Image (cartoon, rainbow, N blue to C red; front, side, top):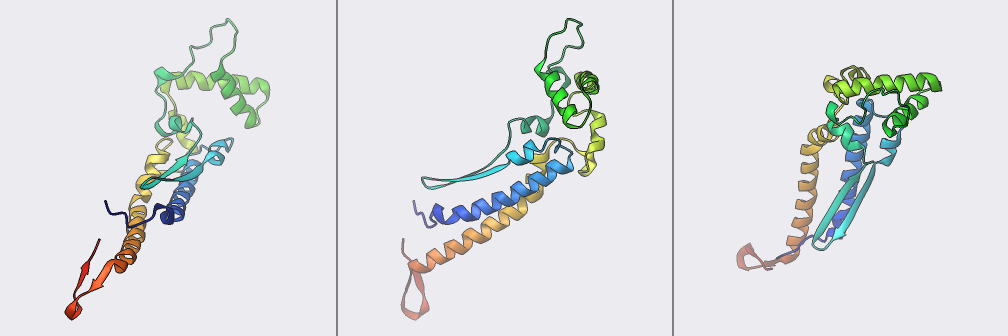
Length: 188
């Protein structure tokens, strides 16, 4: 196998492409109205590892991004309704913290948490009403990763082709050996 391009040379280039894509992901997160606490946007991290014979690039996000990407069907919402037995629920606690961050008093936050849980248990997440928080195309509240990659894919591929073709041409120039009458042969 002929390896003409050193992966270490491409690392900064791949990193910059992923950084650019990460910026578009952050913008789409904001467009879809998912910036409540800001934790998801702050969690976006780009990593490029040089491996034997190539590169692996990643954009890492908080684990809950997968639920914002694809939503959660109603039957998967972890809420059984108000039972009257008391107790605690991590799901309700999370909603409560969300509403408190938005400035509701403890009593208002608790009522909003149970109301949100009941609607999500009926409709899933996102709810139909949550579309009003989105400024994305068609008021989308899911698919921020897929939509961003789809929107940027052609530009990314063109940049990669341009960069690697340029490196490949430079490398091949070193392998060209002149023959008589201006012809050349590539020697590997």
